[in-house]
Image 1 (cartoon, one colour):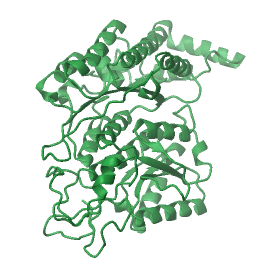
Image 2: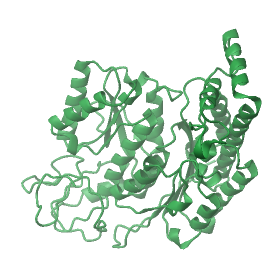
Image 3: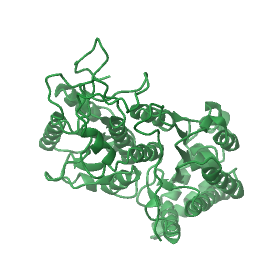
Image 4: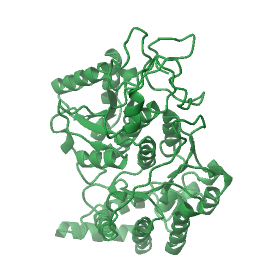
Length: 498
């Protein structure tokens, strides 16, 4: 059966109106899940509106799903071009709340049904939903203060995690002995509550897939939170993949490693769709076998995860060969890179930047242990080479999916903004890739950068600009794919990034 993929509607290129906002329901209130998605919109020149902070909760205090659903029906989301929402926040009150007993399966079902109904009720052109597959460890909390009566706290958290990390079913006598010992330490009541929470979440994730199949969600991404290549989660992932296939969701659904970055990934897709852009992304590793590295908190090699994130962002991957000139070059640094390979990696990155290519850097050396010296080495090298300020994106934190799922959306947001920049009597080279994948940008780039084009909307005064200014002596279109613009009077033709 043919599937029609909706296009996010925005103010037209000929309109001077402010682009319609994107409504966003975050996973929780942490900076990476709440603030960074809003900042991503600022990079792209788009307003990302969120529920009032008090409704989102904080750590052990869950958000208010029913109040958030009321907000989604209120004037606060009037005229939204798209809705991107965390199913964990809507169903349970956030990530931490999704890992504990409390919300019943019928309650979660009904909330996700209400979320699906908003597409028709509010006339939303696009609804994207992201959720997590429950990680193996409960939230780590000490047994004191607000967590004094938490169902799993202190040493019990470590014991539950150890139990959940065993092969399912146990493969050896030693596995069986460990499982029996851990069951005794955890206790039947606590282990039963943990396993029941996993079953509930699996059922709710399957229900969310059904809502997508029925047309309530245009796209859904389920990310496996913090779990390696062995453990109880593998059966959950297999069950969800089976359900996805049974509903024939095709490219409208994805199941992959990740959690905290999913909001940014979903927003990047919306931003790219808004300008009819399918970014071509090449991946460059710091060592020849870099793609085979396995993050200890993910269940597949990083190359698989990165490929899935590229697709989830609404982009497509191109081979890293000289004949392919990608819209975005994603440079991925992994641990244990030999000095010669590191130098070659940095040289190639510098050459791409000098050529005006869009470069995003994901430093995954966090995977080797404690953060610090290795990350500092790279940042100092980029500063010394004079290219740190010319990167479109840089990220280095926590897991492979977290890092790549931050850097790539940043680069896409920067590229999307280029299609909406004003060109009134400015020296502008709109170096968005000239390809059939990006017809809007191709048409824009065909306009001489010295000509006035008043039809394009002006950016908000407080918007974040991420492009280098073109010196007046530089001819129109001289540097391919570097999207540039002139600063206001008083800072003309400087090479300062703001």
